[in-house]
Length: 64
Image 1 (tube, rainbow, N blue to C red):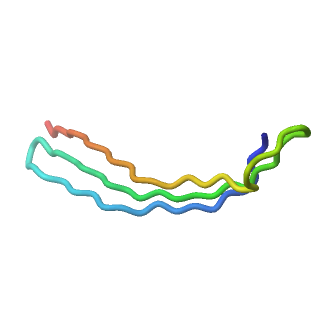
Image 2 (image 1 turned 45 degrees about the horizontal axis):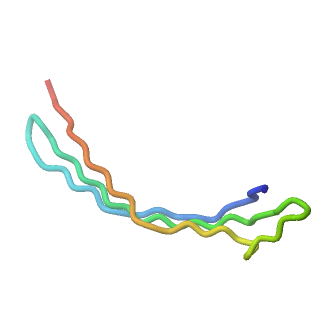
């Protein structure tokens, strides 16, 4: 299966709290579409593969 050109976007929000030790939280919405070329003998349900959802990240950063 081959994936051709894609179209997508990602946007979200980042929150940082703290002074010397910082806590980071990211919430992103991701959406993208891929055109699909199936090999001979394989019949996909659709000509596109769509990916969509939320991505959540949490992190800690210290400054010394």
